[in-house]
Image (cartoon, rainbow, N blue to C red):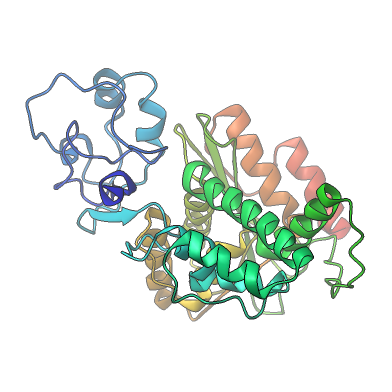
Length: 368
């Protein structure tokens, strides 16, 4: 059954998840251990988690197969919550009986926004549940050229969906749509003459916060599917001077969204340690920033961390969240990459690694 292959347990306090019997590793379906652990039946994950919510590294390294260890260590237990189930085949982790081919490719509200951007503002009839009948309906109501493009875009949307399901990648729709149009035109040998509203050029340098506030830049560095992730947070004043920066190395495989959320969480924790009450938090992850700003509900593992971040806002007088492009986030990006490459966790108030120091100077020369 589709439900049985698409669901996965997310780790809260670990009390409900059985180590060998349940699907809980955040990699490709079926999410089970590659090799079962030689332990009694129904032993649960809480036996491997400390009171502080950290993995018991010695036990993890001795219990699990070497291919499973990175995926275990890439999980951030949410010990103040019970374990919960997420549905991997939807963006928000919620299961829907309607997730058939027709719904997934054409009729889901989220994917219909993509079709509208592609120029199909009246894609219908979504009361049809059979994929073949839906295609026949489009054939009868679209011109030959429109139908060919419709089929081509369907294929690209299917690829995009598979990237999300199997690789945990979710390309930004603002950049994906022009790419999809250009790709299809190249394959069809067509010239697409419609002009799209060009996005305003983003600033190429770090932007200071307003007077009286500090700016917390955060980022994550990882190679999808490979062991090791670095996250970072750098706090600066409106003159660009460094207040404090921190990196944390996570010795496991992580999905991009979870890593970006973890970096933001690190930044807020760092601000609390330094008794900062008014700040802006900037990240180059539109998905996570949007979820925080909109208070979006998500049953994913990163969604739970977003809820924690939203709750932490009450501890500050003012805490605002902003999307900054990678060009405006170079210092945090460099620190995260340094952490991943060196496999180190560090705290700085003055001297930074050379690459990061260069970014700081390049952003704001007066900060040197």
